[in-house]
Image (cartoon, rainbow, N blue to C red):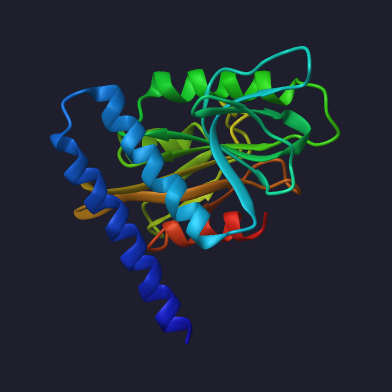
Length: 223
């Protein structure tokens, strides 16, 4: 049975990457991005039918967040509908996801600032804020080092180094489902991973197994 679910996750990730490729026919970049966001939202809704999933912004009654690609709350949460967007009380929001077709260093910096604004809003609970990317335009080692993970060539795995500075403390998770490969120590590795904040240690837990989408769905399942 476990093997069946693993195969489903592989299918699910392949489906996301296939939709990403097909949507390249859309020349308007904003529309292309919105189509990809819509596809991820639809998959979340189909997997967890007790969740409210939309796009829009958050507020605590005073401050207002920048626009959020994906906002997730329980179905019972009160919603203010503004056309195709929603406005949600930050206290009701469980998860905020930024979707990036090709993540850049500037994107990460800007999202860390956005997440900081959201977490400063008044409310008893703070939403989990993270990034879902299809690709990223720099080396895997470079990205992971900014979250304190360094590649050890001797044992061929990543290890956390708490002595390193944590550059983006407001980002709770990042997932990459990139099919691109890069050369590392005489082998080719896919630029895929799942990284999530560890509330116990204050650092991050890193998952390099395939397919990383299963860790994203487990995060959704826990809402």
